[in-house]
Amino acid sequence: MFLPKYPDSPTPPPAHTHAPTAPAPIRRSLPSVAIDKNTVAVVLVGGVVLTALLAAVAVTAISVAVAAVVLRSMLRDHNRH
Image 1 (cartoon, helix red, strand yellow):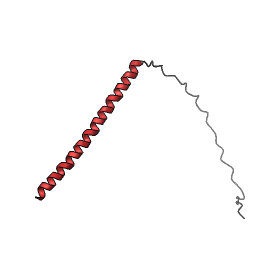
Image 2: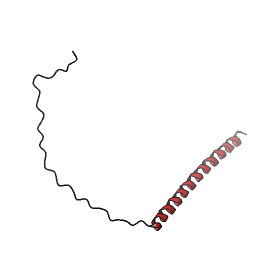
Image 3: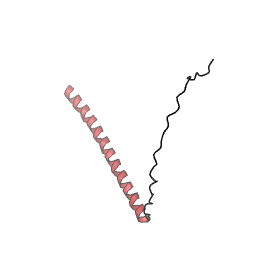
Image 4: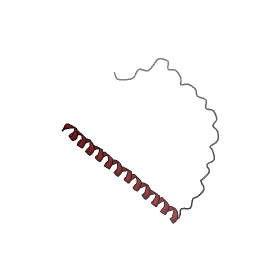
């Protein structure tokens, strides 16, 4: 009852011809980089400086937004009276 019905004359699958592929490219290793204490220190200091700058920008944006809300409220109250 629930058996699938197959076509009377199934068509054969198409024949695919594969073209020969090019040989795999030669992988060249990157030159080794010496990581010393100075490099680590420079990266850490750079990360700290960038984080501090991002925090300063965020604090400035928040303070400007708060000042704008306060000024808007004061001007609205001033115009009503």
